[in-house]
Image: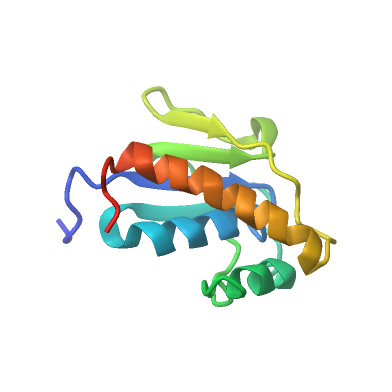
Length: 141
């Protein structure tokens, strides 16, 4: 057993390319939750690299996701997560009973400039704030 406690919730963010929305969401949750939540992200058809405009938009708010790499969604990642947040991946996400699933309808930042990605970034932050409050009540430090 590693240092992970049994009560630490885990969240998986999934979008098609794992290059924009899911990476921004994972960046926000990691930044806001620290080590209180295990954060994963993956894509059903991962891109070759993270969207540089998503990296720039997150850098503007002090969060560096430049080192992240798009990852292929695995059955294990879903099985090991308590909450699965999908963002436009449709039916490609494996379903396991007992998991909490949410589908976040968000614009895709692909092909957009940073000015168009900022509102997506802020929408993701609002959703991540609400998720964090739900998973770790009164857990803000």
